[in-house]
Image 1 (cartoon, helix red, strand yellow):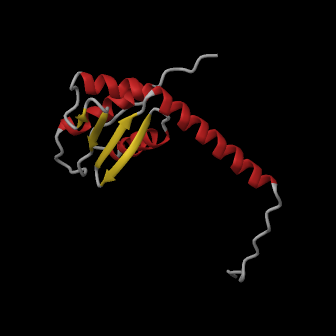
Image 2: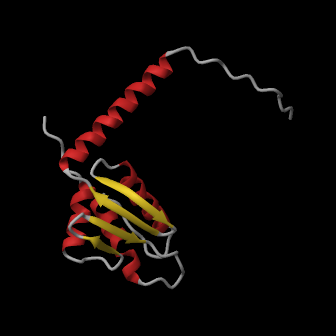
Length: 141
């Protein structure tokens, strides 16, 4: 069975190729290194700050409300997708600026196999007897 294409990768490529978002841009196009800049949320933030998050919400079939906490939630949700993705490697995170690299097919396979091995190793360790934890004190109400 073939793997489903990555929504994140298609979303990022479209945004980068079309220069669709103000805060998403290539740093090095030949090595496919890009950055996303999330400015600190302010009451009078420009609408361009939220364009990428509005489109990401729309892609995920969610509703984005301007002026709500959706900016923070969307930023965290997009960052989590970047970290968990097999297609993208987060290289640097400095405040609101995130630098990432789109991986080649060979690097993706290697990353998937490493994650698979890590999961298997983790499940093997949990199958062994885990000593129980006894608290040193019991808090009385």
